[in-house]
Image 1 (spheres, rainbow, N blue to C red):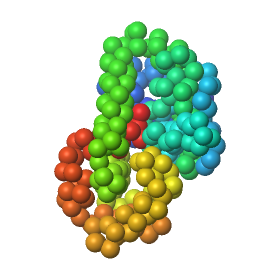
Image 2 (image 1 turned 90 degrees about the vertical axis):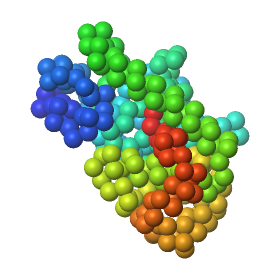
Image 3 (image 1 turned 135 degrees about the horizontal axis):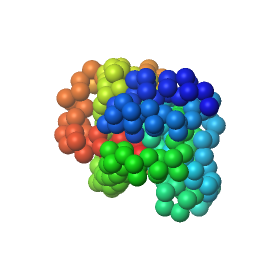
Length: 249
């Protein structure tokens, strides 16, 4: 293994504070680094893992983004989340050692592979890592529960506002602009995730554009009035951001 590449993928990574090694000491991160596998980038449309694949590893997103989805009985797909830089995916395989979902790249995406047998061993040695993994799983459960509330109780307009606010917060957390960003997912994917028709998503984004709450040009979004967007989303910012953030897992 090329230790220099591993070092670059974790120890010197700007996303360390968002990722699993958060809270580890310098020596512990050095130990953690030895188990990290830096994968070749995967390109748009390619799959990281599929439903039914054997579970072997977690994956930390270094750059790019992915959607997590499952096939429906009628032959379609249901998107259950999106993952962006600094987020971990693959937790769905912990239950029965097989992945429940499929993860597909929305754009060229770089990842670090974290083999579970190594993570499990490190968790036994470092309580901080174990606590962080438990916290991560707890957040994922809370996010999915909050998303159920959004899908079951919110109007279409509230869902769109909630989703955009979530993206804004997550970009900002990564040191990027929370008011100007590009959508890596299509209107169809957003609609699928939020339980709406693609035409509804396009119409509502157009309305927000006309009301000068935001500007939408293809996949580019610029938010002009964050407070108004919160108001449309139901003014429940904590729950709203957590809900649509099940990009995460």
